Amino acid sequence: MSEIIVKAIASNIFPHGDYVSPGLATVKPDSCFPHMILGNRYDSSWFYLRRNISHNFYVDKRRTGVGFVSRDEANILYNTALKFQGKKALEIGCWMGWSACHLALGGVELDVIDPMLSQELFSESVTDSLQRAGVKELVNLIPGYSPQKVEEIANKLQRKWSLIFIDGHHEAPAPLNDAMICEQFAEPDALILFHDLASPDVGAGLDYLRNQGWNTMVYQTMQIMGVAWRGNVEPVIHQPDPTINWQLPPHLHDYLVSGVTPTIAIDRFSAMLKAIQPYTFLSKAQLFSLYSQVQQGYDYLFWLPKIFRQAIANQKQQKSQVKISPN
Image (cartoon, rainbow, N blue to C red; front, top):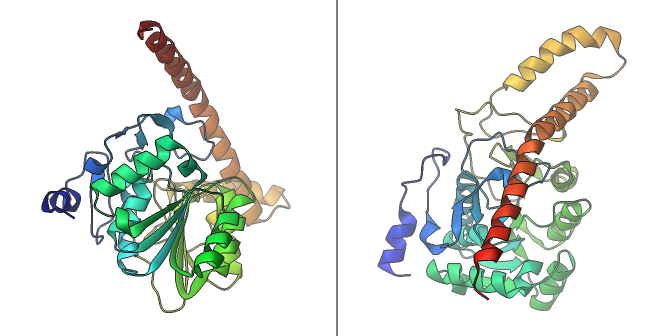
């Protein structure tokens, strides 16, 4: 890795709107991703995107509907990888390689499985970014779908992984299937990270590992990350951004959350509980789940007009570009 690359990546000067937990070592490989821009979170229609979190939402300008892991989340990956330097790691779902780059910069030998890597745009873009960061030799890019490809590679290469990052297909039963296959091929001393735990479908994967006896914890980040570990390993300690009034969805409220204090949402629920509980047979847990689901649905309905307006604006822009493009 050249001295110029090292200096650029080691920079800890982040743009306004980024947050990284105190106590974490930082890297900044932005220069290795020439198509990365600050995105509009209303370009995405995904129900579980936490549009109310003010952290920067980064995207690839060629595919603006899907975001990268946030700056804070990326540095959780990097710091976790530092604990596993020289060991085998697996990533399920890399999109444009932003997360893979942070893992590789932490010094792990990384296998990456993603069906998008079968497309030229993605494979060339990811390869280029990893080369710019000087870590391509640490990364094995594998087109394919999990869990089938995970099992195939594990058997073919006689592979066990110490660190695993699951950020693949988010709809059930995919996250659960990913967790099950990863547990099968995880080392006795292993740690598994999840992204987009805001979705209960993704949460099912963490639930499975907890039920299998793994230690578990949640990171309050833009999209919520989860961590499960066993054996002689420890997770990164994370402090959420203190300027944000964090909320935890009902499927996660039984989890230990790194550095979290009670939220405004819980305070509001407590007040509501006093008024409602005498008149219902529902338990406190059931009422909290219902309250959180209604709140989440309300938030999405509030965001929906903005999502539609952004989609219309994007269509108009695409049509205008077609009209002015040369024949």
